[in-house]
Length: 418
Ligand code: SF4
Ligand code: SF4
Image (cartoon, rainbow, N blue to C red; front, side, top):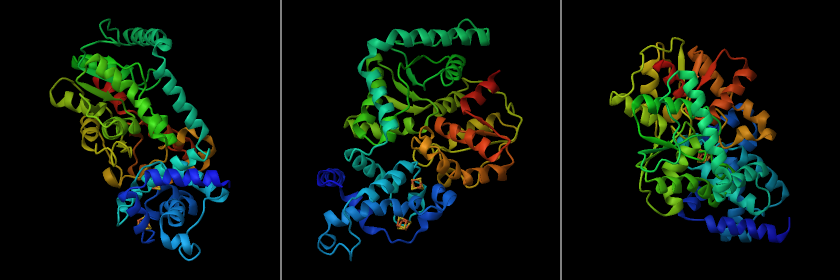
């Protein structure tokens, strides 16, 4: 590998180095407890997916360039220069990581392997080995934000089409998909397509909520790609829109990583406090129910149903009970997965993996634990408030021949409203 590439990678590591990362790199006891926590290692048995091994690749470079012992006696202290082999393994283990942080939860030292993987992505990008597909998707989203005038009218026309369909489907001519409404209380940020817009519009309408729809989608490929600047720019599109419209609350649709970006990361990325509250749509529905603004039929969902905590909503987002209150209010037979909440198994679809065809085989094998959990409940419906989880679980249904319907929680709520 050329010296300039090595220097660039080491430069990124240097820039991202701080006490917390240094501690993660210094203290791993190699106890291997994390191996039983990672769905990818458990599902494939492949050493490169063992969490501590993923971190070890960065640790070897760290020892070579940031410790005196590694600098002078590299062979003795497992210090290593980045080379082509390291780059290839780093690419597979890093872009393979879903960022679920289940390994961190079980690690006795709480070593955040997903964080180390995020630093590794920065090093790969600097070396020209970032994932191309994720980079292109991130750039396309940024382009849309940089040129709103090119897209505005087409988008608004599309939203009006969705509104017309909704009116046809419900027979209610007063239902709206409002856009660009200054002074609305909430800005709802959906995903591309109508499937996250229609149920939200029906729920907001039923609750009598003042709202407006974002022109931008919540998904953030900059985060998956591993470029913090790109990720910030993508989120900034709807953050600026919310400021411009003067809303009191930004509501993120059923999308795990987008919720974590808006709720947890954005303020520290931007170095400023947001002038509005950020909520997940299920928090809002739970609030509507508590306030008596949404009438749902108890027991409306007759089939046995379970709930999957998306890692970025549950373990990394702290939202466990609101979704369960909603599902249990409308289910006749709710059967929780075991384990659940903070110990929930990752389904295997996060981190942008559902978009990466070269990782399909590993992704499907990594869903084995999720399949085992679902089978143990006997449920025929699974609800989950994350698009990537749902796409993954639909693939698991085919791969493992499951008798299972995968649903968004909002769609179940709408079923219980009818
Ligand atoms: S559980 Fe923690 S300390 Fe043990 S090997 Fe894994 S990362 Fe290292
Ligand atoms: S964050 Fe999840 S996918 Fe990544 S190494 Fe840890 S357990 Fe495995």
